[in-house]
Structure formats: C-alpha cells, structure tokens
Length: 119
Picture 1 (spheres, one colour):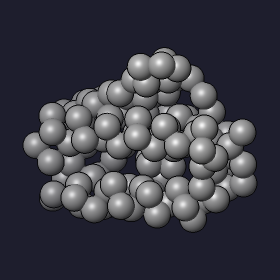
Picture 2 (cartoon, helix red, strand yellow; picture 1 turned 30 degrees about the horizontal axis):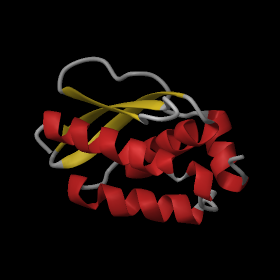
Picture 3 (cartoon, helix red, strand yellow; picture 1 turned 180 degrees about the vertical axis):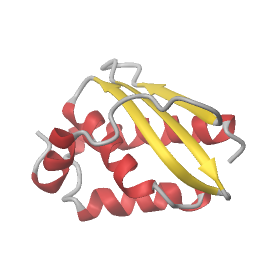
Picture 4 (cartoon, one colour; picture 1 turned 180 degrees about the horizontal axis):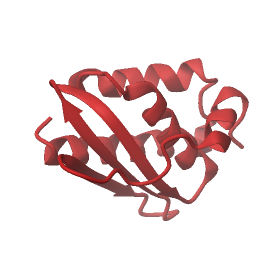
C-alpha cells in the first residue's frame, strides 16, 4: 500500500482532471496485466511543462505517481522530467516492488503527451 508522503499526495489528488483549452497534449498508458490506466494532459510554454492534469484508475500507486508528477514536473524541461519524477518518488518514500509499474505508466503517458505536444 502506498505510504508516507506519497500517500498524502495521492489522497489530495491535486491536478486530477483533464486540462482544457488551446495547446493541450494528451498521453496515456495502460498496464497490460492489471489494467491500471493513466492519462496525462499537459501544456508546454517556453519549452517547459507549464501545466499538467491527470486521470488514473487502478491501484493507488498509479494515482499517487500521477498526482506527484503534476506536483513536481510543472516548470521542468521535458528532457529532465523523467529523472525529476524518479527523484520525487524517492523523496516521497519510494514505491514497493509491486507498485513500481505505476512509475512506468506515468512515464509512458508523459512521453506520449510530450511527443504529441512537440516536446
């Protein structure tokens, strides 16, 4: 079960929902075995991630990592976002072995959104 700061981030779920308006790019990823699904919407400005939103269903870790991405990736350059997310997960207490797939889901959704948004 997601614990510590990551649990708090999950329960607040800041950034839950899809961004609307001009310049929003979407990316999604689904785990083929458990069915967890994450969708990220993002807006780039001046070569940086200006805003993020997420929709997630499945295990609590998927929601927690998506919410953490929203919280910690705003303002980052697209190229530094994966390393920044990994560092944020570690700083928040990390994921148990059975939860680590959530990081991959969010990173795949992020990569797809960045590719769609020209990042």
